[in-house]
Image (cartoon, rainbow, N blue to C red; front, side, top):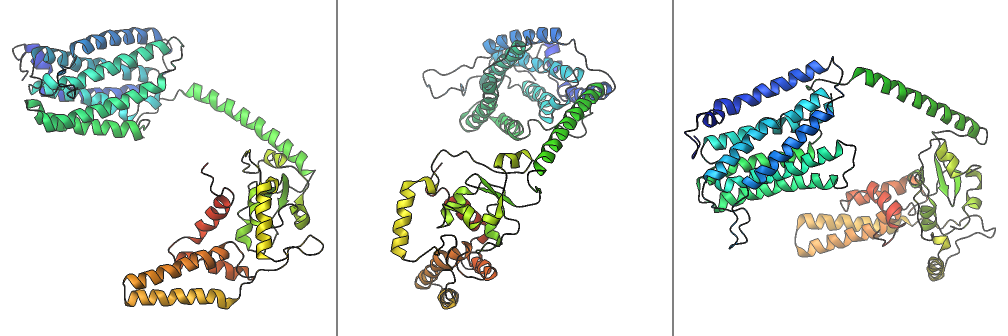
Length: 488
């Protein structure tokens, strides 16, 4: 029973478990019934005056509770911000009781939601919180621990409600609140502070309140989870209160807008189709602001290399991977499409075109100097006399990568037969050899003239080193080579 007001009959009655745990079930049933009733009724549009009065009542009530529930903080020991080990007191019990009653006043929030037929706000979090929070405080009062340290949770919740209902009152007049995002953050801070409070109570409290710290710990954990991950979750069993008339008008309006957009898109595509033979299924790419059709193109490094460029502006990809990077229209003259990238996107073709404000390789003097030095050091002619074709310098001898693979196989057998530091070092060295030689060059499409064999050898990354050839090809060539050592 109540510790200080147990002789007050009506207070004891309202805190009796029969009342505390029965009323929430009745309320949930009434909410479901009212929501079901409103499915065949029009939303009430003249609720704002009543909601404003309600918000004012809530603000006044919560301000009074903030004053009455102020925790007794041990200012001599400033680390005790929760007022731990505060003796159970009559004043605290009275204001916790008022706070408990205010949880029934909060049920009007759900009434406004149902009458306005806003099903999206009738979330599981909303119903769960309003159905259980009153029962928690009523049960604590019934067990005689409604004061002392426990008043902190009621105090910070009342403070949060002052902020929330002030926001609701302000926005009800059509005014915007620039601090709206901070209100949500404050609510999350409130839950975490109550979690911290419950942990401190369970460890340092010496009063009867300690025996109930687990309740707040569990409850606030559920609130953090729901508020962070399931805030907008509405169970499918919730009655659909959608206003049919408004839904029908909205649907018709949306259909008209979609029809106009489709008609405009068709006209654009018809006009563009006259310019070139556009086909959504073709493999288009953009290099140096020109469109190329790679659908029938047989890339020397294999089809999987071409696919990296499809559907994106591949200027950086092309220039960073080819020595002949300044005249792609000469090398791929037959693939050139007489249109612009913008027209291609206007036709609905998904084309990723990042807006980059730095020089591409062909525009960078620094890149050109490095390229010239590398070509000179490697010392091979990379162009034919007519300056249009790349000389065939691919085709690494089989004995070369065969030596690497056989070395790895022998090292793996050695390690399995005699696992030790020495065999581990040998195996690691062979794995590095494959990573830096065979799989690296194969996944670049430059190890063998036979593209299928090169594709298979690229999977030595998977078999020998435990990586992924598929991920490597994308990440290394679309990310690393394009933005080498660029954190941004």
